[in-house]
Length: 155
Image (cartoon, rainbow, N blue to C red):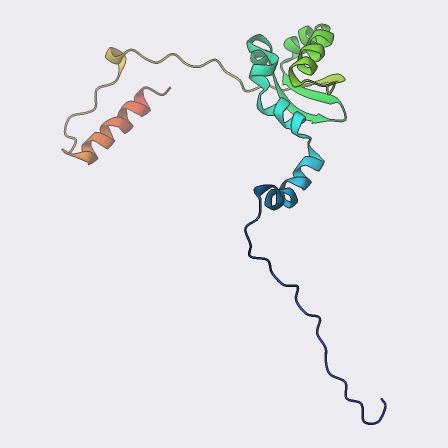
């Protein structure tokens, strides 16, 4: 150290904060950019709106699991996979047309129940179970009666 010179611990100044109003795009860009790098918005649209894009018949047979590198992976049962494999060119064409760009190049099928079941019919009011006698009066009794009916008549 040179004589007569004093060194101070100089810390870098913190950048000034801007508290002025900003547009939502400026706030959302840093948040959504990593998600869009992983999955393009069109691919997210394909997975989220599967039933409307694929149609009722196809969505009853298969469910999308993953989309990467132009390959759409569909979960379906074994017999459905064979049927869908023969229809692959038509399915790919329909999906690309619905999305508005050529995204899906190949279909891959995995043997797995798609987990899509048709909605259960609502039981007729006369079929609803009557709650047991002796329930308390008031809101508690009504809640217990609804709980009992929900257990006896799920759906």
